[in-house]
Length: 508
Image 1 (cartoon, rainbow, N blue to C red):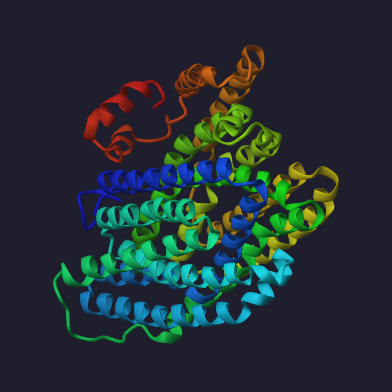
Image 2 (tube, helix red, strand yellow):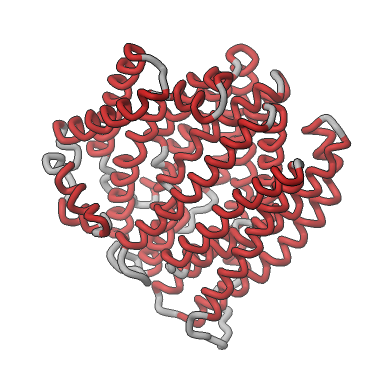
């Protein structure tokens, strides 16, 4: 994984992480402010609008963001620059048409969504405002996928950072000034359209222009790749959101508001996996184009190790101090979701590896697997939601939601092995995860003994980090990896590589 179109994987990864972190922080600031100034009912309404928008986004983007990542990198791997640019332009053009179609469809069905989900036809105007947000997010998503396909990871990180992060601040500013959720959606949409314009400038005006046209990749090939992605995406959103709809149906919007905030905290940590998968899919697609199967397996193992090394301790660390985090970020009433937060983060701490396996399956064009995966996850979440939520409330919802990642991982792993994934390094993965789990239990005991006070957070964080580093070194968790290969992926800026080398000295 040493060659990219920029300054190496380590540099590209650092930019992607910086972008993801800034996006997560700006989103966190936004939701914290919203949770403090708006009643839980309004937070539930915002959550419902975002859920509806995500469903429409997946339907009308037709899997083109993922297709752009794969096909552009695939032809880059073959050295065919004419076809690379041609397929990019064709995908973007088709996405513009779909964006307009989504706008029209949402306006026509706004009243239906308002009646079914908000139980109030007067909220139709909220769904109508969301139509602009949906249209902008479709275009922006395809441009984002195309930039990753071109492997201009640094530029993508900068554009994504400036657009998506600022969208929260503009949306929040309009919300505070005009006191309406509609203005929040309009502010976010404006930034998405502006970001799309920046992508156009960087990809097609600041790079060598190629005017020749090529049609080696047929539309049939693109649609054959994309239709399982969009179908599985629809089922997947249903599988991911059904617990929220059931909470709204069996309980109330105030409980949905608390549960949505808990989900927000849990899902915000996905920024730790996003940069790795952003780089992994284009690189694996490139290896697939040149039949480098050994590099495919090596990339999956290396990425899995790095992801679990970063994600597991942070997820379980946040779970250990959950009651403090929820109270500090919102209000004391939100602490009622701390058990649900532990379930969500605890299960995701190892099944987050689904993202890495997803990249491999997408890279080798086995997209029809996702129809099977999402059908099973939908069945799992629906069954558990109706079974557990009426009895266990938010805890039942968290268990139902977490079943999605468990089922997805099991199926993905099976098909990845079928697709020639060799020697998945479970030994390293489990050593790192058990070290994180040990840290979780020790910090939880420390918190219970010393109290749920915000002023104690620095102590809990420092002790948790120290415990994790000690356990990783004691178990020699990285013994099966080559030290030089691992350190080559760590950015040298700010002495980070030297710090990691010292902290993990005995882990190899």
